[in-house]
Amino acid sequence: MPDASPSAALHAARTLDRERFACALLAPVARREDLMLALAFNAETGRVRDRVREPLAGALRLQWWEEGLGGAAPGHPLLGPLALRIARGALPIEPFLSMVEARRAALDDPTPADLAALEGRIAATDGALATLVLAATGCAADAAARAAGHHLALGWGLVGTLRAVGPDRAQGWVGLPRAVLEEAGVAVEALRAGHAAPEALAAATRRLAAAARSHLDRGRALGREAGRAAAPLLAWEVAARGHLARLGRWGWNPLDPRLLDPRPRALAVLWLGLRVAARRRRLGVAGP
Image (tube, rainbow, N blue to C red; front, side):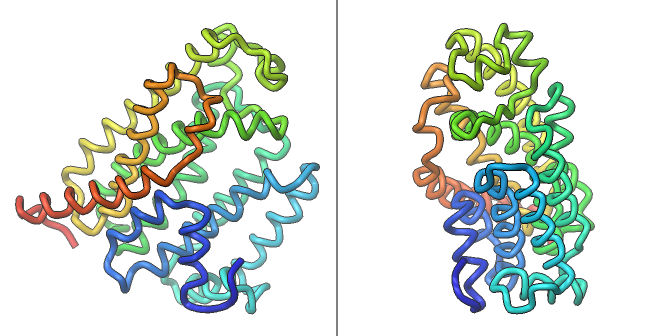
């Protein structure tokens, strides 16, 4: 973590979540620090599982992050400023607590039972982050932005789950829903051991990709009624669709290591997001 300064959260967000960092740059400069704090907290708590060998160690780390939200780590470069913003009412604490609790539960039960269980987990993490993005951009009262954000977060999270199949397997985790895998003819233990049949794994991948695309479509439709200030959230769609397109080009193989490179997509997100914002201004779309 970088040393204490106004740019500490920005540095962490740029390093750990490049694409949504690029999305956040669509916000006015005055709004960005809160966005970066939310992105950095989400990324830091999200990678706890990958940095521990035992669930108990992960739970202790998550407890430390949770306690820091209440001011227990005033000198920390991320938690210090974040706790102050929460105390002043600039950001709600509930979405942060939701992230921590969902990740604590996933330590003991990493494989969701079915698609609904996976989407519930995503709603508690990426959905919570979407809520924070809207709060940070002044769009918390924008009903269209909230509805769009719900679906875009689910779409993003499903795509992220597919992109994480390889790293998860390397850690001994399986994050794909058991029911979806079994329906496609993939045993959870076979995937964990690296013995899943490519055709069967591709079938499970296509099932989740279709669900992700459906959420992204609904998010795009609902987002047309959202205010311009919601652009940092609405731009998530661009990155998620880019990953789906690449996954399709590579035969729906979630183990392809190229899925983990965000650099081309980060630039594309920012460029396309700016085009979307410009087009909305020309059309005179109302909003904060």
